[in-house]
Image (cartoon, rainbow, N blue to C red; front, side, top):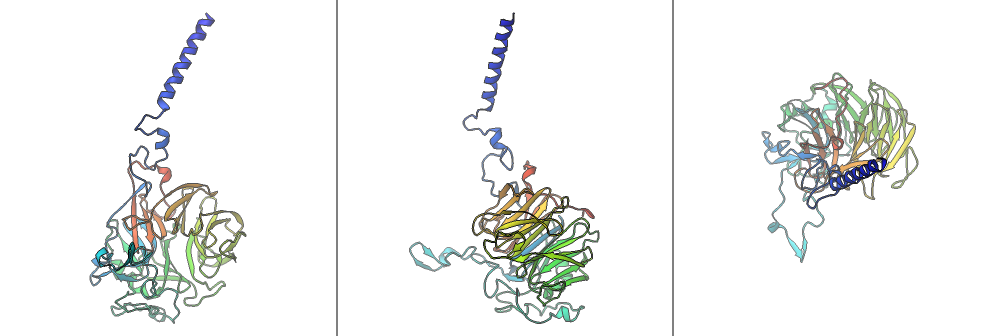
Length: 449
């Protein structure tokens, strides 16, 4: 009897083994469930996943040429972007550039076989570089702006260029609409010209725009890199509430910055500023903007390895749960991690030679970053283990070329600020996208719309 039971069990085991092998073995022309699990959209057939779990929302925002009086003018280098909600998205830019299209190939001079002009110029006009129009107003000197001389000053139509701008005013570029606000369909909201335009000459390099997610009044903050200041506005933009730093006065102390870059907050309202392009420090403030402390020393680029030494402090983000502060030490190609009081905890390298992390963003347990060298949007876990990456170079809609800012709204749409082409971009999650690959939504502790 026992021999018979043994034979039956053996038969069952062999049958089950064969069944499992047949189920797991790939059939020609089919994708295994294991392989599909690596896809941003499991089971998707074809494609290359250049944009990962997203698809670009085309014709967003609407062209600047749709504004009355701006026919022939377009966006310049888009520095930063922030979605208060899907229907109110802020972005900053360095003035306006002429709206141009790539010249037809027949109109480009040929210098020899297989050699065309311009050589190594991609895109055909880089909105972030150029002596005349690429860096309008950025990092120049000069005295107080009209707004600083008179708080009630309103920018007139005759003011079309930044005082520090080189080039032909109104031909090469003009200094208008440093702050733009658009809705979910990409329409430029009236507040762009009726409210925020009055502050145009307050800025020379509006590097970062953001709202503190723990602030019930939703103040709008702008880090101004050229004038070494941080500005806090009422949410409607009608009032400049607070100024940190000394405008036009670079320095390194409690009341002076030198080309600051980004802001982040902890749930209790504690604020951190990366300061930044010239200074090499992180500055900590209380919820009212009172200076508390700083940390960071100047390193030896481009291969500094000592903790707490920086070269180009360009990007900062906070984990609201662990209260860890992530800092992009851009020139040294690494992320450094500190506790809330500047104690060094960890670091990791961000990639190959030439890697340039412009912006970092922390949400839902992942640190996301934009690399201007590889043109990738990258995710690491809190310990620096690579999780996922997407993006690619090109002139096609959605190309991630020189991404300088990342934001996510309540619906999970992702917004990117791009320098090189000079554009703000919106991406929506693809149907069936793996949620582990989506850029996490930010914390909305004090407000949700």
